[in-house]
Length: 279
Image (cartoon, rainbow, N blue to C red; front, top):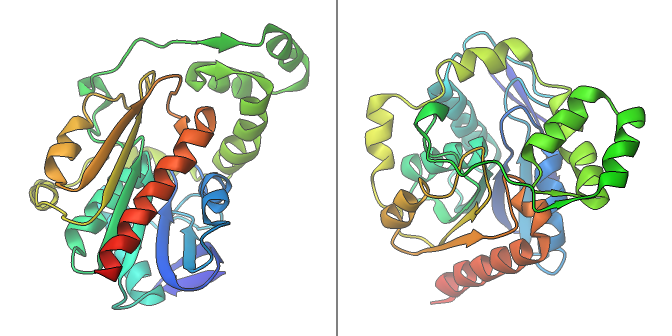
């Protein structure tokens, strides 16, 4: 489906009906990374209207020249919310850069947001200032990697090796289907433009410091060498109802490498949201 907001046409997928849930993918990807990890959770939770947009310049949502930075990206998503789920309470889930935007949404629409889930969220936009663990591989399927040398694009294999803590066939297949497939569609000019202005403006950053008091989940990978896990602790202090979990055997693709724990923790977060609604 498409949602037209002025000159911007945001493509999105939706499933189910009921309480709206907005689910935001990571930088350069598309909605498929979120549907793949979240739809199994909602298989037993049919009373949710899951909304998976492609961010501007990513997936099937075209870029627009006025989107220059993360403030503009947030503005676009806030307009999308006002159009698709106007004045309705909703949940928001974000992964990586989508988690950064989700923090902005919780600050801007705190009266509407019922629950917040952050998956390996970006906290510090400037990568040089992040506290990161050394890149680590805990399991490597040498037969698979040898096979990929002759069957997959070299740059795709290199991307996989750089991000995967568990380098096995299951992870590769999901990485190819859910991560690489989306990244191939991204608008390189927009990615570079926004990456050069990656952080929110000073005034918006001050708004982020406000506490969001709804049920919150923060998931971080102990071996995440992209955004780390230590910088995320500030979120635990900001959100008084946060569960904060750092998972071993998980890098930036925590939702793949620790899928069972991921689904269990997201399910528990939904339990807390529903408990609050019934009080």
